[in-house]
Amino acid sequence: MKTNATDYRIYGRILMVLALLISNTFVSAQNRLCLEWNAEKDIVFEAGTLNEYLDLDKYKVILFGEQHNNVFDPQIKYELITEAHRHARIRHVFLEISVSNAWHFNRYLHTGDSNLLYILSAKRQKTPYMHFWERLYLFNRQLPDTGKIVIHGIDFETTSVFQTLLELAPAGAEIPQGLRRVMDTIYAHRNDPPLKMWNVIDNKFVLYDNASFVKTLRYVQDALADNLIETKIYFGINASVVLNIAANRTPVEVRAKRRNRTMSQAIKKITAVQGFNRFIGFFGNQHTSYGVPGSLGNNAAKLHDINRKDVLNISEIAYNLKAADTAFRIRHFQEIVNLNGSCGASLLPASYVPGFRKSADFVVITDIYRQ
Image 1 (cartoon, rainbow, N blue to C red):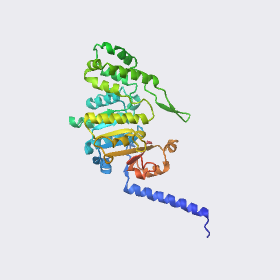
Image 2 (cartoon, helix red, strand yellow):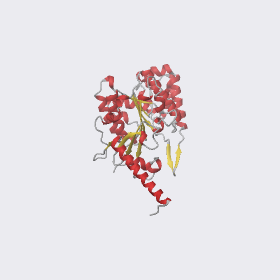
Image 3 (cartoon, helix red, strand yellow):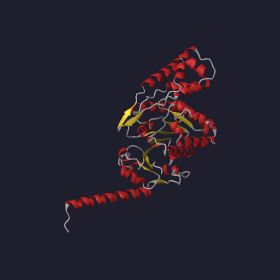
Image 4 (spheres, helix red, strand yellow):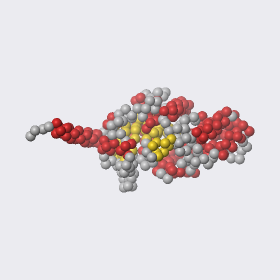
């Protein structure tokens, strides 16, 4: 039988598909950690599993580049934080949140008073994130004082900062003359609605203008910092938190470049002042990716007593097969879905994931659709 060029092309495509299937089987069997779903469609994490696969005890810095979903992220964050604490002696946690929000989370971990969480976004209170904080509180409660978890917020302040500053102020105390105007401003904005940063309208990415909020925020920060003595006297034991809020000049914007710079500077300062070099951090992919110049992932290796081999960088791919636009938002969509197979989530070296070889050390792929 005569074979023409078309036949060869067909045979070639068949061989490519077979090679991909064989490759995926090899990755699945030899290099992938498959995390299963339970009956409630939660991912099952056996104790010690992540450490056994990732060798967490080898690292000083662990970064997780997330896609900001409320389904899988609360689970993986809890597991990574607690496993890193047990096996890598890491208790400092950097988050993509503000200084003022971090204060609430630290107070909650210390007291268990859920009222401290109510000031934060109501959206998160109705998601697994509330369960995440409850679990973390219970874990933290049984730790010795020297091993307690500490939350560090290094991203921009949001409108909840005004209510937080009122909480930090001494109840019933007379306000010094130099702070009266700024405290009036803070009080006037105590019920400002949450910031709107972006939206997708008619398939277009739209950025919102928050210039008015930024102007008010910078005035408040400058006034508190410029009246240093009165700020220290008035806020007393909370003055250090207030001054850290005043010093937080991370740009209020969606773009990652300038925020990466200020957040990297914050990490460098906090680790130097507080004297630690072991931490875990959770940020969006554009903040952690090795492929983004000036990212936290690249800058981590420049910290004191930290080398590239001390850094573990994990990137997340979260997909939903029921969402029509998922395939358009994820590069190499079908290949990546095939790598996860029937698992609820899969961990594997980044070199096996198309498009992520130069972005991270490992990749977690997860199906966030829940029936």
